[in-house]
Length: 264
Image (tube, rainbow, N blue to C red; front, side):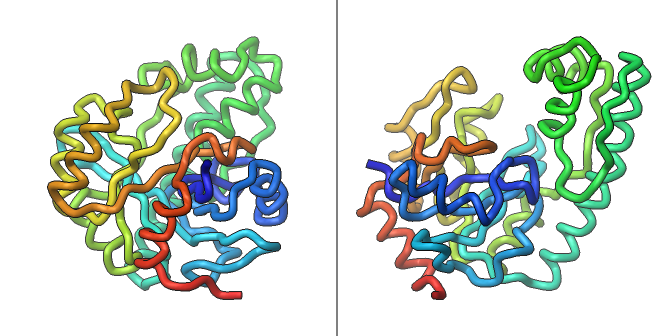
């Protein structure tokens, strides 16, 4: 039974949940703990490492994209306390997201002749643009928008600024008592990604890979044992899919011990 879903996104980045809808979604899924891990941004509506929100424990977190040299990886920080350096880096990344979003939208509109009606803003990601494409007369659904237009090899793709791995680890370690590697088997080179766990506190063991990678839980557990890592997990929810993956009660207690008690 999933007690804690430690990987979820809100409208502060590319999710559809808000802090107002999160308790209902969690309650319907039978989940007691949710970590809000928006992309390259910590939620402005949360001001404590963990807090109680309508009966749900909400962990303040972040998912930070980093460049490891061989490819880009995602780090998850939990129990976040804002630091000046992390805030400055997130602001820099969000400025880049605004400019990148504007350029992608312009390219899509030029490519398709459709008006997307979406304004560049902080937190804007390709999922937002894909939804706008699907709702326009461009002729593509959400998946088709990625496949034919804005995917990594698409004609409308634009890269974005990414923090270096070492810098990302330093920034998150200063702000978060737990820093882990997200979804190791979504990367081109999972072994190389897992090798970097020696610099971290945790690794995401429970994740709904589906067609997005081959899961090898025994390998993750072996790496965790080798480096004395916490095991984390979550649904990577961008909608209302809370509870697809996560930690049971014992797993959550081990993480909670590192985070401290939630603020009421």
